[in-house]
Image (cartoon, rainbow, N blue to C red; front, side):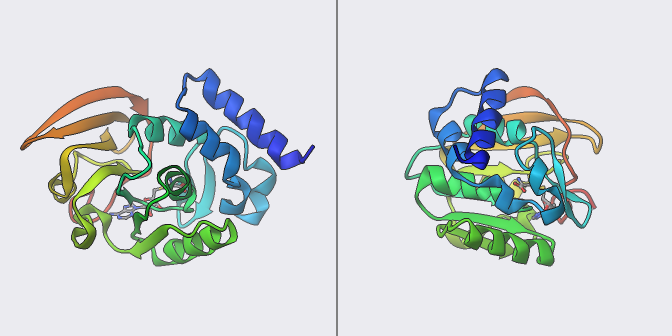
Length: 213
Ligand code: SAH
């Protein structure tokens, strides 16, 4: 059997053992080739359940963490999703595989944005638009969004993001201090956010206007 497919299957078993059940998320992780999103020197570790360096002091998150966040977003086929912090482009690729619609993802480091575009092209994922910008400002042009995912640690939900979320939309972000955060899922109901804490995680900081200065 294809060795990499075997590795992806093992990765999915690990993720399932942590409690991730969403079939669409697991299927996307089986189909999207994570090794195309990590630097060459780490390719043999692409399917291990830990984060890997992608340059510029940034990492591609651990597979379980990404699976958990995507499950929390309750993604549906026709959801319009905004992602903040493209990194390698891997999580955007998974979202794109699940939703089938266009995914908007912003990255504040230009060379990472370029690399992510390259990775997505190699993985033959066409429905992702990578935007080089400060994602804490959201992306007004295509708003409002059904779902918003923040891939970096923030002091609180950046205001422009909750503004650009649809009514009944869901936003997921790691919120807290610089060294440890709580994953928070919130549903927008009118002007109110109904929040739920989902457990502790560690992320790189979200910088930018509504992030860490
Ligand atoms: N899930 C990603 C990993 C993201 S790591 C993956 O699959 O690879 C978090 C990313 O957020 C980093 O690349 C970092 O540069 C980016 N980032 C930090 N602050 C940001 C901001 N204000 N806007 C957009 N991206 C930001």
